[in-house]
Image 1: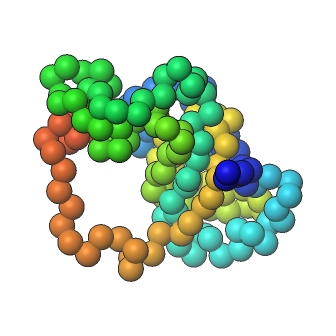
Image 2: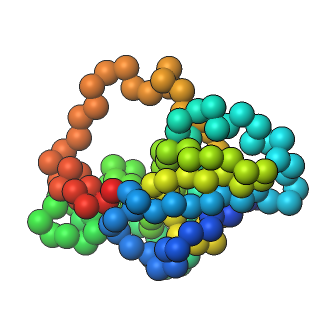
Length: 151
């Protein structure tokens, strides 16, 4: 059994789950009171961070374990849940690379986090070039079409 507790929560203007237009969203990630501001010291010296969060509003009856059409669009192929980034995943985990704007105490201000207000954050990791892919990234055409208006 794995037990995880949120380290922080998201604060932003997006209260509803939406599929697109996340690029300009400014979010504040506020650490839980169990953490002092020291936990974020020097995070602002990085340009980007990876935010790992929990899709807390996905109901158990919506969890996918097999294949489906992304966004239920029949024009796109049916692909396995692990071959897409949909929220209805077995462990309901999301990961997004965000731009760090600033840090104030226990608050981290970021841009481009595709998580709604109140979302529990499980971890924050700075982006380091050495962890990025060394090879060219490839993806199917449907994924490019799906992401057209995402950011």
